[in-house]
Image (tube, rainbow, N blue to C red):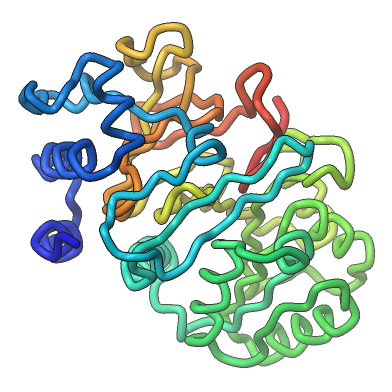
Length: 329
């Protein structure tokens, strides 16, 4: 374990725009067999100094989390999270050495966008996640829910109870978060007959999970607003392989919290990093992934903008549709 590195990451306001990534790179290529082999193949053997520019760092293909245990610590993991798999191509596994790092990362990210969780009532509609073991999203929402006010809870398929809780929170003027997987929110919207929600922020995530045709994010948000009212719909972007998240508070433009960076790479040339308004592979530097891998090339297609935001446009060709917030073009 590397407590010095942990303290440097979480002891500052944000590790971004620092040289902490170089320490992470050196630590992980030396102590993570999978990442070390990948770095060797990509021209960064152990006897070669770490680069001075993060753009030269080899980003590990996210598929490696399906094929290997991507793990840096010498101790046994405290928990392993598993991805969903909607096409039968297998699950990714993220072995987490220290759950407290995950809690610190998602707490910082959540508070960066929404403020303290204890200011909210929090209700969740996450059936596809609750119906399987090892969901990192369920763990995160559950931990935030423990801090929240009543009414709160996971509602699975009990739409009547959820609508009753929403009505109670709205009637009392309580700030409320409704966190749901896209297809379940659409089902709830069909049943909703109440007035426009005034105090409730909806956070959608997870795409359709094979429960219906994929939709553009704009179409999804329009359908939800048609039932729940004109308040902008927020979105969460996360995945099993990351301990940090990004959020879009409106219009599907994602911003990252203190421990995450998202960049756009040319899918055909991993050494070519694309500027704003160009579409390519989303790559993540997750500073909270101290004991797995912080440099991950995802299978998501995205586009960055000059204001620091990023759009998730869908999946790269031949990639499995799974994970949080995968919506079609």
